[in-house]
Image 1 (cartoon, rainbow, N blue to C red):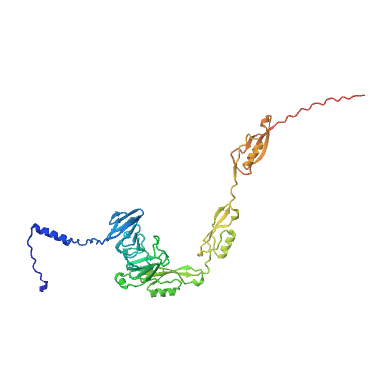
Image 2 (cartoon, rainbow, N blue to C red; image 1 turned 135 degrees about the horizontal axis):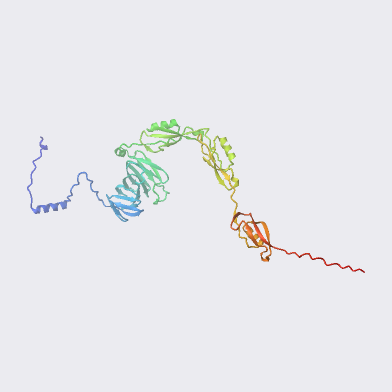
Length: 460
């Protein structure tokens, strides 16, 4: 055995039992910081490098926890602490070096480290509405030189500096601007965002930036080191090209020709051209991904549903026949009290301008006029009234006196009084109807015929 591999025999130290020896050993441990090593497989305790920030705002029901302990506004977060929101609680962490981190409801992120020197940078961490399936580790560098590193599923940036550059180290990041521009940035790629000079300063409602620009492969070393097999290519824009051109473009891009679906074209010039595609142009997809196409197909015999509303039914049926559209025999009716709408089209299906599929029948709903019921009135109480007052009461109620039957009476106070009516009081009748009444009439007594006195003739 070589001499340098030989180990000297282990010497057994003499047993020391003097109390002064143990006192000196304890003092040495205190001075040198003797710390027992962690058991194998245990997680080392997080190193504390000081205060990261303070909880300055808590909104909504729920709770905010730091290291599984419920905290309130004003709580301090140290480096290595674990923060999470429970329920609908939202919180704002104001960083000690400037800037804010806004935690959405039901969020349990992992923050590796935060540093926002010389600028104000806001990060909204929202795990509840994940935009990507893989963990995303990004490094954001603002125009003022601040760097923010987060590990999570997705986040939205709010910045007051003019520009921000993002490098995706692992996974992929989805970023969207407040003007509708959006990008998916894979591992090893950089994305630069900026605000227009004329754009106002962001408010708490401005979750996104104004403009996005991106460049592929700006950091190829990161891509090779951290992509872990994630190699994606942008899906080309095929809209407007014909089928053969689309097949050639996809082949040169390393993608496959997928399914083809047809959609109706209004112009003959669009026939055979790509109307839409899936995935959308600019989407980062793995090589070999199939791209489905929606191709225009122009059919001369595709009829278009005409506008039929408020037309007479006979005219609507003629127009459908001229357009070659069959009409469903079963038609619906809609009651109307407007006589001018009678037998006119109230509704149509499909709507005007729709392209009718083969063997599709049009459905019409036709107005049907029904005369509204006449207004009703209540027969007043006429018994005991004089006929003149009874006539006045009937006119007030919208009714008329019908047949008047008189019955003789010898009592002068009853003369002209109503003692019977038909219909009786309280009955509902149409306005203008007649009410028959019976009235008393005073008897007239005539003088008996007296014989004429005899005429005396004087004879001379």
